[in-house]
Image (cartoon, rainbow, N blue to C red; front, side, top):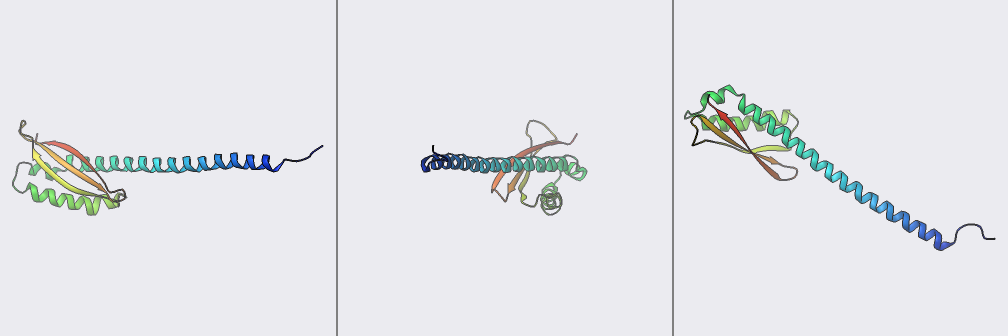
Length: 135
C-alpha cells in the first residue's frame, strides 16, 4: 500500500494554491486603490464645505458685495484660504486654483462664486458654485 502523495498531486495542489493567492493579492490591491479614491473624495467634500461656509459667513465679503474693491478682497481671500485655512486644516495636498464671482443677471443682489479646487496628489480639479445674497 502506497503512503503519501505523488509528485503530480503535490504540484496540482500548489498550482491551485498559487492561483488563490495571486487573485487574493490582486483583489487586495484593487480594494486599497478604491479606498484611497473614496478617501480623496471625502477630503474634497470636506474642503468644499469649509470653503463654502467661509464664503457664506464672511461678513466682510457680504459687506463688499456690489462694491468696486470686491475683486481685490476676493483675491486676498483666496490667498488666505490657500496659506492659512487649508494647510492648518490638514489639507496640504490641495489648493484653490481660482475663486471668481459674478452677479446673477436675473436677480439683483445675488452673486455666484466659482471655486476651483486642485488636488496636487492626483492632479484633478473640482469646481463648485456658491450663491451669496446681499439680503
